[in-house]
Image (cartoon, rainbow, N blue to C red; front, side, top):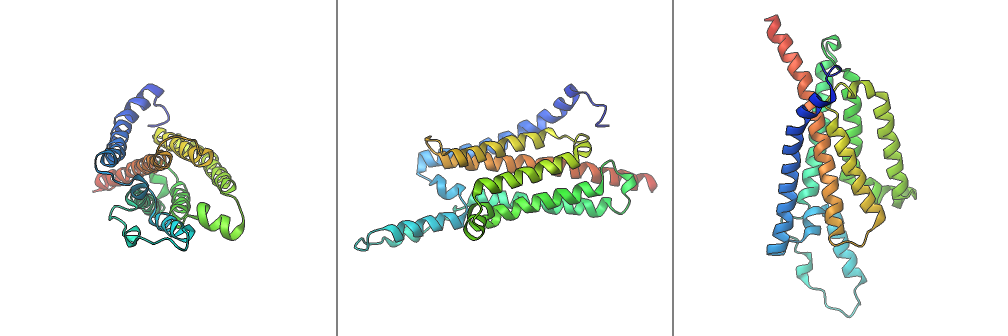
Length: 242
């Protein structure tokens, strides 16, 4: 089904879902930017993870002169702190669970399915690694602090790991709507570039985290769509056997 599809047909199938996904992301992120402009919503608070937000507040307090008076309101964080970061974590969790569930379903009778069950198990592993990195700030806090390995080195390790995954499962991936996966990698690359480059642009952190969220969103849509296709095959086989 996927192998013989020409590029034009693949693109036509990809485009509607892609447009809807990007509209959702732009609507969410653009809406946050508008609320910042109209109501003064702190973009760093709404985009960043709660640990980093609170750590920066504590650092500001610690670096303040001993004679200065600390405002208690500095510790009163709004309810929206970490909103986008937490949404990204939920997406990582969903993808990991769905891939693992699909692996369990397809491993019972692998010959019925177009894709190998091991592809879904490894997809769950890769997604879970990225999940825990994002959740525990492994590349940002843990590895540099406790292992003395730079953040750029961690990015390189993750890049090689994902490259090895793509090489190993390239035939499986080429049978799917892989354009979502390519788009997610572009967004991740843009986010990492902004993280490393520290360009002197307004709202630098907002754009960095926005690209990261859009990468997670497209990654999630790809695996949810791919897993759904395999589950549809299982359902059709069950219905035919009744």
